Structure formats: structure tokens, C-alpha cells
Amino acid sequence: MSSQSAAPAALSGLTPIGDRIRERIEKAGARFHANDNIEAFIEEGELDLLQEEVAEKMTEVLRALVIDTESDHNTQDTARRVAKMYLKEVFGGRYAAEPPVTEFPNVARLNELMIVGPVTVRSACSHHFCPIIGRIWIGVMPNEHSALIGLSKYARLVEWVMTRPQIQEEAIAQVAELLQDKMQPDGLAIVMEADHYCMQWRGVKDMDSKMTNSIMRGSFLKDPNLRRELLSLLNRKG
Image (cartoon, rainbow, N blue to C red; front, top):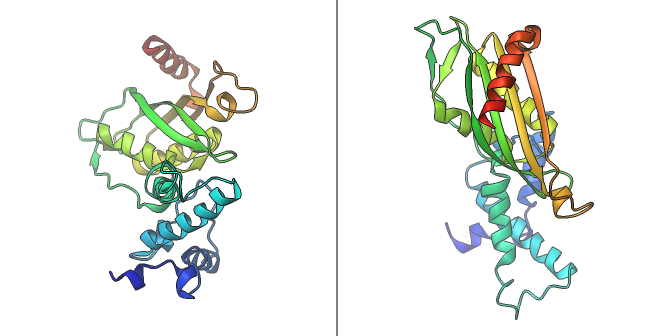
């Protein structure tokens, strides 16, 4: 790609890349909240251009903060690094396609409780863009018609959902919807415990507070004995 074609749209006189993507989303009547995936509306090559555009805007943010990005060797490349971090890493789940997951038939007709976890969670609060670091456990009650997925695929799907600006309550609901749709189990349970740096790093600066919440669906919601079994096993795992 030539340097001219790679130049940010704002410099080439074209409509900015971010605005072009936004126009496609709005034309389709789709949503683009912070925790939504918008990969379907990004055309080939546009993510790199969007990264350049974000870097350009981030340079302006640093200037507004009165941070020297010219003579300070520590911040000369900060705008580019932050843009790459947002689009390719910590918010990558907004811009990347869903990871491929092979589903297997339940040949053995498994119908006993399965627990996967803890799966490490790295996300960011959509209110302050501060880190959310924690763990997720997934409980599944399959039936003979359920699809099964490989153990590592749970982690990949969780990461895809969590690498977006989130609030914890909505994040585990998204994980639950994704797994319910793929597996169609009799019961599904998601439990998440996390540290929120918007409380620890700013505000009240309480370093000991964690947030724990859960979603119970199907048999986990209807059967209190099954729910107690799940929570008892999770307590043993610490």
C-alpha cells in the first residue's frame, strides 16, 4: 500500500474512516454501543486506516493535556501505541470477527454438570476506560441434542466478548447469550468475579472491593439443588 493511500482520511480530504463506518452502521439500522461488535461494517484495509485516524486524534488529546510529544522521548510515539492498543488489543472484540469454534454432537449423550474455569477476564469499564481484571466460571448442563465445544474455545469466546468497553452485568449476559445460542444446553450458568480499577485507581480508591455476579438459565434457574451444587463446587475451587 502506498503512503498516499495509507494516509488518514482527514489528511486526504476524504470523509474520515470512522465516519464512513458509522454511516454504514446507521444505514443498516444497527447498534454501535461500546460493547457491540461492528466487524461486519468494516471493509478490508479500513482497520489500519482507522488506527491511523485514532492516533491522529490521540495526538490532539495529548496536546490538550499539555503533554510534550515532540521533545519528550517517552511520549513521542504514545498516540500510535494507544491507538493500536485500543483497536487491536483491549477493545479488539469490537473490531474482530467472532473466533471460529467447531461444535461437536453430544454422541455420548452427556447430561451431567460440567464446569469450565476460571477463565481469566481482561476488559475495560465503559465509563472510565479503566481495567476490569477478573475470572469467569461457566457451568453447563448439556442434553443429548446439545452441541459441545472444545475447552479452549470457551476462553476464546469469553475473550472476544470481554475485549470491549463493558460493564460487568452486561458482559456476562453477552457471554451467556453467545454460549446458549451455540450449545443449546438444558442449563447454563455464568459466574464472574472481578477487580474494577475505576474504584481502585480513582474515585474511592478502595483496593479490596470486588464485584461478583451471576446469570442462571434453564435448569440452573429452575432447580435449586443444581444451583447449590454448582456454587458449592465453585466455593471449593476458591
